[in-house]
Image (tube, rainbow, N blue to C red; front, side, top):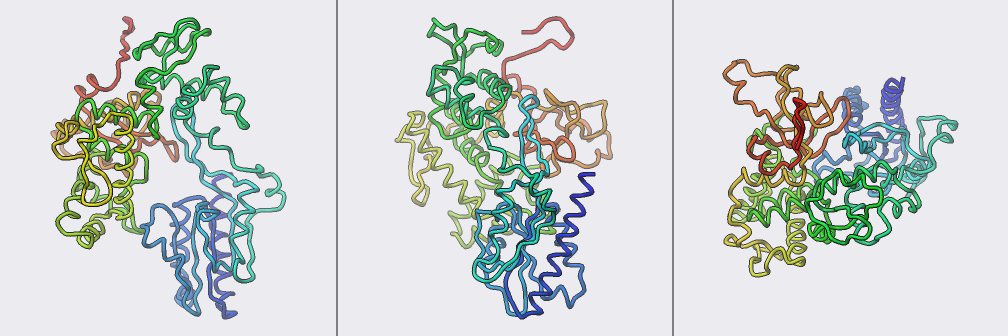
Length: 505
């Protein structure tokens, strides 16, 4: 079956990489063997296989994983010249197709596989699956070899399989959530979002557009009015999306959101952060949602990295990042960059990731100032060129209230709530669209086994906010935070259903 084939391809890739490395060193050549793999699991598997080789074979190989999970400083070693008598075996995903150029590649080993995220609009679920790469990507991979010396590409698939591959990757507009695209489209046309996007070169599915528009209505960013009526309110009911002769218009909130270079959900969090005067931590959370996780997991140190993350918070992934970032800023101010770098390494944090958060915060703050949501008098310099909020700024009056901060995040993700199922296996969660989900093992609140004492069961959180629901080996909830019923009632949306069948409001 498909899974067995993938496992065979990975095993074959390891064997080919080994054979090429031994042949090249035997001929007195040094350089790199670039192995294209679908994802992190396969990279780890081949790393173990190569490390288990006999000493006289293993010592001529320098194995380098190239993946976002690997710390930036370790990734940089792919560019270092290889010592004489050795070959670098670079285990990479499709990031090495075009984003990274390595000059000394002698051979490419192409598995013909890629791990790609797709989006199911009906379940609002992202799905990570291993797929066959496209012919364009396969050609791009082959071109990585022989840039400064003769090279060769070993394709682990037949010519018939190559010809059966799609010509090019699926366009992003057909495999991602479209809320931001629909919001921008609505701000530029009165002809209707569905009609406008239907004229694109690679139009998205109509159902995807319809469900994205429904979520924008739920956020209060878009409303529908009758063709002759130009007036609307931000509290338009989601059911109005079914009106056939309605015209889509931006609400005042939608007009603000369309001016922010952000996903509409994240933009609403920022605007609510301004209104509730807890902007500084919400800025950090928004920056984190717009970039990669600053926590890193060095190869073979997953448990240590998870313990480090849980030291900051064991109930909320969002608070873990917020506290880690705030502490790093204090260390940076007190001990300088050298001390901050040591502290980051000891806590399994990427210094580049933390600096990226600082830069993104400044950019977001600039956009909020440009739109008039933040007064320029509330800004100062945070010890560098980046503008920061003053400690006594009005929009920071409640910045120390962590419960309020998490509640504000709820406003941008009103449907992303999960409850613990009391009558199911431990750890099983129910969401609005899925009855058998679970926290991702990377979440700080994840527990593999139930508490041993019954008295500890009562302390377990029953409700969680999550950023995204992903289907891989099972349905996982990523970036989760425990929330209280009070936070949900006040900030989690306004649609209430009577599950007993007595009506809804």
